[in-house]
Image (cartoon, rainbow, N blue to C red; front, side, top):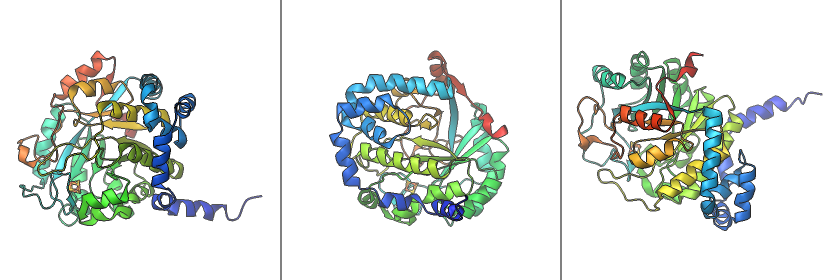
Length: 383
Ligand code: SF4
């Protein structure tokens, strides 16, 4: 017999957000478990490598460090099984560096006395020309978070223009309301990247001191709004260095697991950016070594075979070349992190310093040399 309450229970599940799930988690308990995991826990996790949060915890723990080689081998195999040898190529287009928030790790922070710039339609078209000549067909639109000057009306005006030139358009801007996302999807938006930066509310508060971004809970529930609006792909991320990276990564895993369970139609990606120097920015509080980054990428691949993992130009060429084969699925190259930077570079406007300054061609050649195929066009939207 049908349960008459089944539909309303399902609706209730969808109407609540990750904030409710997050409130049930004890960060101190999870941290304790992370640092008391044993070799047996890691070995168990390696035997059942997908989808289990306890396994993710073990694989992110210090106890997993001696198993890095085995994790890497499994990660490569799982990635090739799901994604073949393809690596999706994308490039950021910075629309504006205006920002109404104070984040002490970012060059665009409100109090920084830098030249501010928001691209006009013709400046966007000027930027698109060099981007297209590099071969790109997938673009990530980035801006500071300034609702009044770079808000939904601006995005609605610019998206159709940009969409004519790219088959996949992602955005990394301020969190919006569900209806706003719906309207942007109608204008051609495919994906939204929305990084929590850190899942530790106290650390979050210390680094986000003014502006709407200081509302931890609003940001935490934003991916729910993105998913409810029917955006094809949702990207999560933490800024590695703000807090204990193992705990932040684990909590991002909880967030991802909740979203996948609740919004099974969406695709998901993660980014693992390390804190980089910028004008007036803070130094990392907790350093994540290259080895730690490798562990994290492998742990997420073993946790989730479908997950897309992005790698930006924040990392050095040598490290990026080694990470390409490991579990990464999307890579940027030739990036500028300033509005107007593809036409007229001006380092004073940078959001953060880039480590890999190679051209997209050189990066693509490095991939080919490792038996990987750089893919410039995301065909899925055309299916
Ligand atoms: S991280 Fe984002 S919100 Fe914070 S200052 Fe930079 S651009 Fe603004």
